[in-house]
Image 1: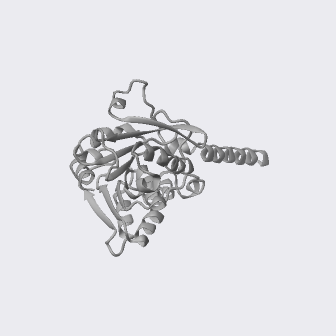
Image 2: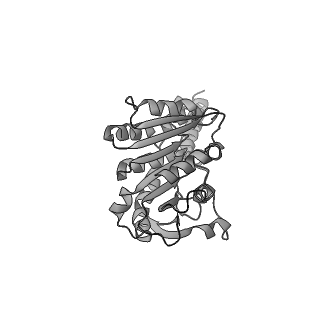
Image 3: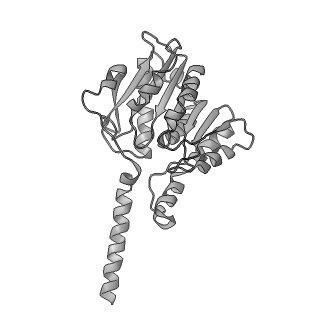
Length: 273
């Protein structure tokens, strides 16, 4: 019996270790580009290093424009790539002096490395001087003109970036409250304690509310079966004054079709800022 219990214990410990080491495969679903991806012709691609890994960032701006009035950074979900944003951004008003940064996470697209909170946030930071040079701005001027738009996981990146870099406008589509809460829903309370990929949109929203100089719009589909609609509501509810965070329900929209359902609204935001 003692030997049997030791075997069971060893198997449990092995399972827990594999879960701890392999949880990234349950969170991220990286996609790669083929060499001749047609959408690459619609953007300019710029390489940089982040933590010793080669990364690429993509820009779409009005021909010949420099010193843009507004720069939108777009961050996709965990199964998306930067160029997925092209079809939306192309519908923005071409006469507006705006630029768009389409961002791939480490391990996505042509990027080297592995995704994770530290790697993703560091990659954003390292992209800033690269984007600034391309737009003929210094990094401080770029940050003063920057806003963030994210979907799902990208909401966490946009909100974190807004806090660390002083952005005053964020659009969050289908955000979760915390990755810990998502893990509890997926694998239960016990296994979720092993989570080491921490994203906390509650902390980010609280910080933006405390700052008081930002505007956050949260869109959430009421048919979202991946990230509960109630999570978007709960994030908006953290702004008791209602002056910083605006919550917009999207009727009959799910998690993966919500960007298409919001095309008109999102383009209007991109044009207005």
